[in-house]
Image (cartoon, rainbow, N blue to C red; front, side, top):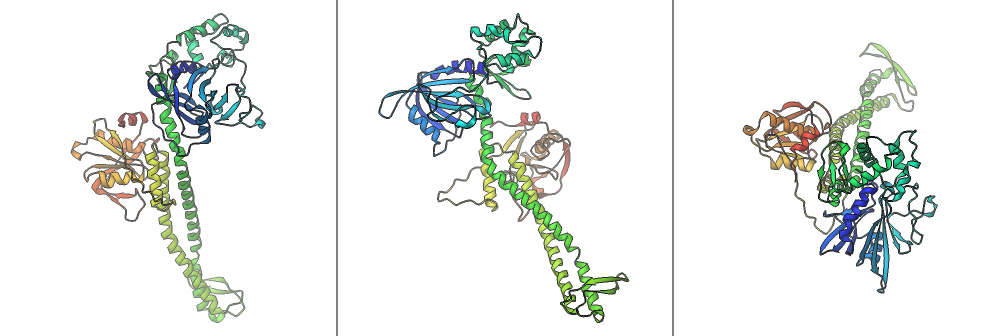
Length: 564
């Protein structure tokens, strides 16, 4: 991606559609992101502005977002000063990633006021600041205190631009002085241009160099001017590479054809929305992840303690033998002895037995019998608990895998419901009855066009295997590896070998071995799959299975996925 100064320049031109528009409502969805609802040119528009450290941006959006019931203080202050106001101008500062949105509004007593919303789209240093017409700060979405040694962003202070190197604005005659700033003998010319010119990204410099072949003292300025001229042809593009790249104009040096969008806002909406939503979902799921990790660690500690108990229980037979030998040789044991040496009739060797001198011989024998029985009971209990603990560990391993695969808020809610139902997560009951959500399975198509359903968590797995599927449908699961339940929703006579391999690849991809090669996948008919009585959600046993080995490839799986 390249949300550079050139991109901002093109985007500001596109946003002229909301210039002179009225701000009807301001909403804040999280700590860094706002939506301005603007009425302009006979239509409603949504202007999204974000100072998110990874997804900082501004553009028009058609997406729907959720907002907290109690609005954050920053949005309350903006509403007081800007709601009902008219957008006077949207102005880029130089060729930088800074934009000033000037709004004419009215205060509480009806007097005209001017407010300036300053957008600083600068990665982790991004900010949104509101000032008065004299650039006195009223509020900021991120505050910087006076002792930070950079600048102060606090109410009452004069606004200062972020400290940056003095750079040349390529859209003015300043660019003609560039050769004097470049050392053509030291190399790394692209990096030198980046440090000298405002608003350029490495991506744009590579495009200029692609057309210029190489930079010289004679062609460097003409090449930049020609690059800016070509960039006047606004073509919002997204290049699907190993790492997606978007820009406001075509990039010929990438050597591939891009996806073209109707507007820059549509491009940014498509690129950022899913990423932003996934980030929000991850944050929402974080608390539940901590609970699962805590329980997993607790089970591991329990297994370790049970193994220690079993190791100690190995002494039980020795204690039983000591009790028998003391009883057999009672006449040789004297009161107040600290030990006794007798002939072990099991091994025909002498053995020395420790004694408690405060106890008579018969009590010493009984003491060893009690120790034997105690360890015997502990051993029996430990084996029972160890089996259950290993099942719990497998369960929490499956939950951890499912947390890694979460893509929707509904899946987060399904995990939460399961944790509450299993008593792992305490949940305060509300008088308001919550509507139970419908379980949505993930759908794929094999290369032959057969429908394949995937459950990405235990609730989905149980629903798919126990309720949705028929007895003769084929069920798939990675062999001895946590993963999803996968079903080809067709009778066996319609299923070919290629369909089985496709479904196996889908199962392998949606497992803990999703990035491995030659993954073993079992498959059998649903009628041979049985839920274990009393077991955790998602746990089943199955018989009559066959096994195939497949290597999942993301591109193949993506092609089979049904878009919903």
